[in-house]
Length: 407
Image 1 (cartoon, helix red, strand yellow):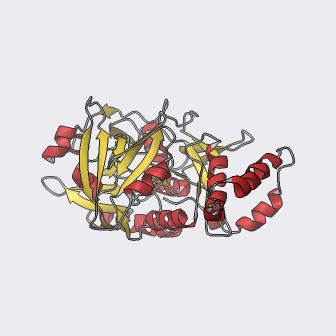
Image 2 (cartoon, rainbow, N blue to C red):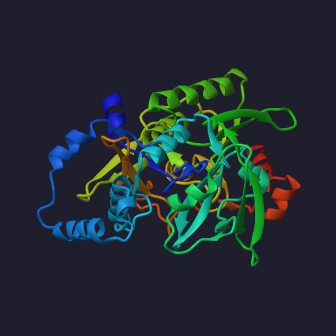
Image 3 (cartoon, rainbow, N blue to C red):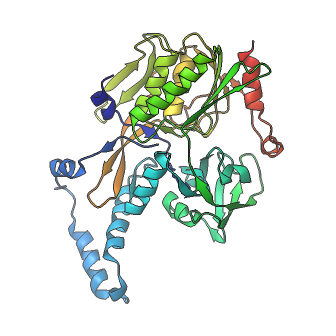
């Protein structure tokens, strides 16, 4: 696929993926619109909306607000813009101010940042943990995918709080502490968890050789994004070459906690795992037009036996790849039901350093069904990873994957 084509296919990075917590991260990095100003010039302004109401409120506030001399106009503009975007009621669409944009970019590019290391999102109008980052303070403290956040320190979360409101309360300098009150999936009583923030660097993928004879490649892919798509592809190729150099024939592709990233990264990985002619994903635009993405070559992992691990923290591009391998009967999928995010956002970099993450596409699995919370990827073999397992440091999902790959 030519580079120009790749750049036009934006990814679905998990929901309002706020790993910027850490900032926590919002769910890799979409391909960015580099010349946002020219796009805005082409779009022009709306002729149907009455902007007079906005200016009436603006001018009344400026003239009549009791502390008018303390008003911050920039903050007012950002607040109004966020309100506009939030009115779409789309968890994948967000406006980030310059500081939020900078932190998002650092997190999605794998750069070092400070925080607890967790990705946040919405589900059923509640703010939840999409996934704690591997090796992060959040994961070490016992934060789990699917946890509902009820309080941050002494602040009780309400229905009016946005993900970024809560991110702002959770993030902080390395060495400082924050206390989260969370409700674990399946539990009835919330728990209070203290977490010490730290400096965090997020690797996109790692390979470890496991098993009695170290003949299984545990290929952990934490996200489908790097600073650029080509950088991610080079990392993928490097790890695939490492597997092949050891003459490993069994691979556990671990997509648990993977919030997504570049759509084209999922297609690239699929090409290494599928022979020519399999549908990896389908894409639907605003006009209802469908584009199919088929595997184009027999790749470098074709001769491997593959098991895929997923959980509720697997979203977007990770669901695309897992669903494609499952429906092509290329791999057995083990773990828990995935998150269900089948939309893609395009990032428009704005002139002041802020950014608009706008949902522009929907993803379909090979069977033509949209990925959503009612139709996510259901494992062939469901294996729970309980809070008790986590506390004991055992991983029944990975253990079952080893059993299956050894059959």
